[in-house]
Image 1 (cartoon, rainbow, N blue to C red):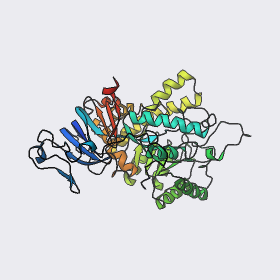
Image 2 (tube, rainbow, N blue to C red):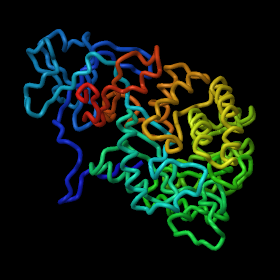
Image 3 (cartoon, rainbow, N blue to C red):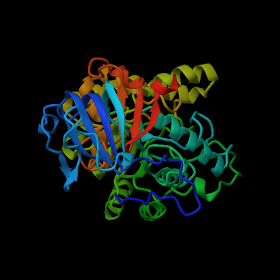
Image 4 (cartoon, rainbow, N blue to C red):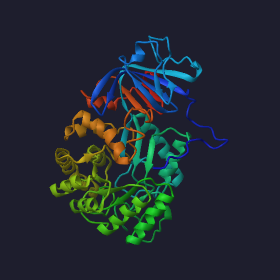
Length: 460
């Protein structure tokens, strides 16, 4: 994926506070999701937003007068300072320390199935009651609360109004507004009247182009749509292979795109250097998408054993939103959502969880994704307890939310771990998330790129 510029244009003030060139983060306990080890008393040395060294008390620099050479000859320690070898003497004004010595630190969390644009989805007609500008403004709000919840990276897998998600991503990268790092789909690729289409309006009402940009009828349309989306800034392609729970008039088990159309999307996307995520609830639609070579199955609610075997064979990731079925059932009934929506939710919620359990037991690759936007933003970490309840260990759930999600996105060289070269994105909690995964629902400190974006200790 191509790195995008992060500097704000001339005359525009960035919302990102000025950060010293070097930051030292003192972690009381640092969880290494790769090994599962909780490492005591670590120092994370950050320069220009990225980790350049992680050092513990047994490192020779902690017991000698020798400076720590972290990377490329950069001095990450102060010779003569045995008590704290990370106090920088070269330019104290350019160095700061963040003390998390009483907390447990994990890499910044990743939600691989997010929708930051717009208000919460429900079983109505999306996109018709708000302008593109209003959608963007709700995205600003949603991005901030998502970041403050500890999710420093998201894969945003679709919006009804094309490219509003890309605009939000670019604003975050430029420092104009706080939010997570984003991969964006730009829009949905969907059949006419399909799960990614705006439905429910009268037949004589025409829709603006940005609400129908990804509607396709044949393989030629698919190829054109993928190219247009990537040219417009998309860095992942989202295709709707079967019906959707929240889109009225769609059938969960129905094929909405053919295997040829899905394969065309995958091949065109590969030519342009991006992956394809496939929305698929239905049993046969899941298998169609896997055979066509998609990177991930989103939802996977009615997966059968053959589908699981295919996912294993092709190395396809499963991104299953195990929490929001409960939210839809409770909030939908309270708020009077359409009976069709509630019925489809009932048909998929427990089936999805059982399919997830079988997929995990079989060894299918999984990545954490919540379908945020169906439920209120900022509650993303609630799903971790569901992932544990339905088959993952607490460590595996954390891996799915860090290492494995980063691998799914092709961003393992940027996020998902706190090793030299990666962005200094992290979450600090009071307890041990390996003993109680719900600790991650209560972040005390959140840091993105070495800059503190939330600190509950100073908020009190």
